[in-house]
Image (tube, rainbow, N blue to C red; front, side, top):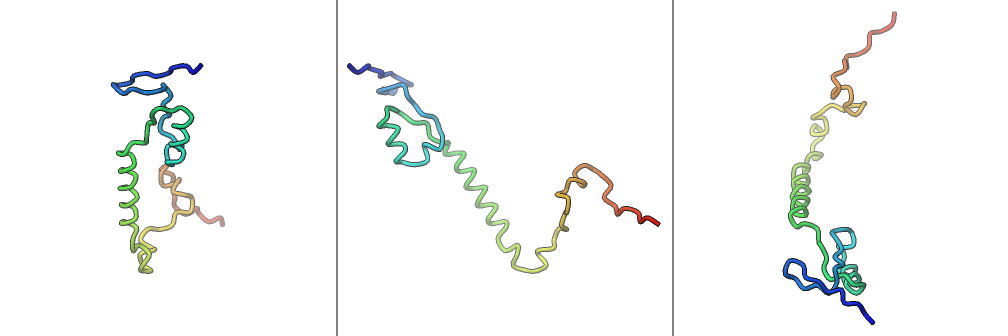
Length: 101
């Protein structure tokens, strides 16, 4: 005999209280259908706002980087930092070491 797990959440009638949260399982429609077949009555999806921010950030990055390597002088706008910038960030003296005599 099957147990009735139906419930009511925020005015929604759900056939079970199993509601998977936003995760990588929610990225594919086939996985969503499988979760429904296994008893999930609803799914929490990723925020559309977060996706929009990520898309806008990626688009801005692409637009600001476009053409930066089209001229040779564009490659030398900033000097190379050999230590990853650690000395500059920490305020250490970055002047050349004195020669030994």
